[in-house]
Image 1 (cartoon, rainbow, N blue to C red):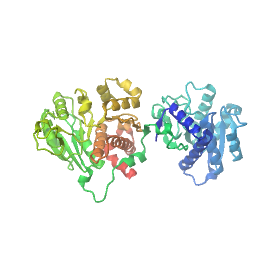
Image 2: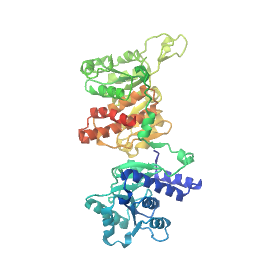
Image 3: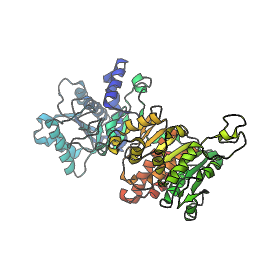
Image 4: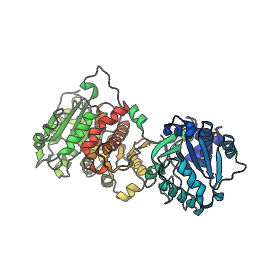
Length: 544
């Protein structure tokens, strides 16, 4: 699903019209697609008993609503249109609905909104087509009164209708996500052609319900359409990224994830990340942890292999770099940082590793090293496996000069806003103001994939592509949740998935696992990171 601003969508429609796909045809496609989705959502086998009421405003989404109403009327539904600031006479879409035996009511003729309230009380589906994506504040009083009356009727209804927002909930600014107080909360929003950016911002997101994109027939080769590089993840995208699982595979087929993590104060981080890497399909997971942690962790994770690192008071020590570099041969992906802590010795470890400062002399041609000059063992440079950096590892990176140049490109960086602030020098408020723009800016500046975590996680690639995860849930606002995400991403990288798609699929699966866990626990407040981890298999089962 593509993600666009309102101005981008207008430009796309304008170019489509100039190219031969007329506005009238786009409206026809939109209305029919809208009706077909309503039929899917209604789950009814008896169309003659179904009643639908459309709140029809003067704009294009009002036209989409009238087309959908006529289509549903032709299918046997009892269809009614409640016209708000839209002329009854001379409108071919109104006439078409009348010809299909639909009913028309004009808001200005409805004293005290009695008819509106009565129709809402008997309808199975309510289409909110009052205001579209071009809406800007303030909300006109006359329209606000209609919306308030509709909300009142919905609140009083014993069996309220299923509410479908046409393109967007009326009264939402589809760029900023601001919402008027009179907005109705939809059960589903059927948005045309592409997701509008404001629908994935608060407070609009809480009004959207299920988000479905309706095809309006835009040609795939339309230049302005092809130029859109922002997308929204869904189940189809995630499923397309997951690597195949051939029946004759062995553990080597699915790679080895090497996870450098943990400290005495954050013992569980390594465990969560390691198990997540296995859950997503890695063939082997090796945990490289301070030696002091092994006894506490090993009994909880018999599937892992272990690399015990030198430590200072329970944190990774500087001289652990040489131990790690001697054990990189089999690793097909490397995760660094979960539960590290911020001690200087761990920072020195990371810098030594990245700068290749502690390498043993080795024979020419050994896997994992590049010869810079024949016979010159002293000039050998370490080539790290595909890299994911998370949590404290990111904060430590920020202390290393020229760190973006030291990472194997493209690495995957997974900061939350606080860590992004440390990396960039921006305030968290500046970062949160426009998360997509910020993530993309620094992905291109650094040359690495950025996963800006939080509500509506944004994944940005150095080549200009972004993907937004359409999930905001407090179920994921829990210590350890990020460790699970990092483990999922490194597990996919270990299997050979490229950096950007691995980050996209990992983030989408992680978000869905959070939603699953909340359902199982019955409350977002009760979800632990381990619950999210355990729900990964449920998400994968749906994608299979």
